[in-house]
Image (cartoon, rainbow, N blue to C red; front, side, top):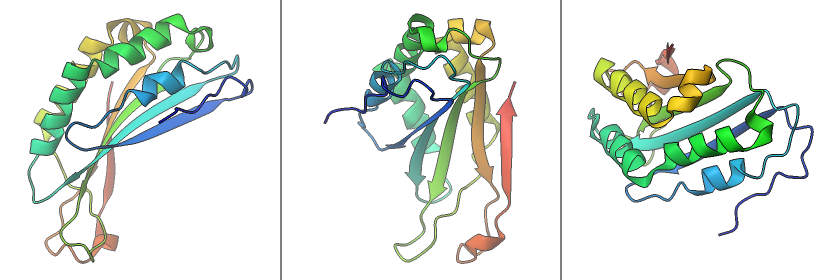
Length: 168
């Protein structure tokens, strides 16, 4: 599959890339797309990794972390951020890396995001800051884990409360 080419979008100010994760997923398109950015006015980049969970287990997120480390995706993104001119002047906190767990109880049910716990946030922080040391040193990284309260009855997705937790 051919990745998008953004070289003709010279006035691009914000870029959000979202990838759905499953075991063995290929996220290499993310750094391929980033490497095509040719904008002098870029001020924000968001990379969001979503994944499905069943039950109240954090196992899928730990699997994602293992695959990210093994695939080298974060190191590839780091390389693009340091080599491509469009990313040289990004302001502090402008590269946002997001993990987004979604619970699916049954096929007819609305998705509900579930709480992952502090260990997931700590591991996410350590993984990204370790794999992307240059971007971390430049101060451009912002890490976000979307956390939602678990519902007693998962049929009422409208009553869930959204909480954003950012690691600084």
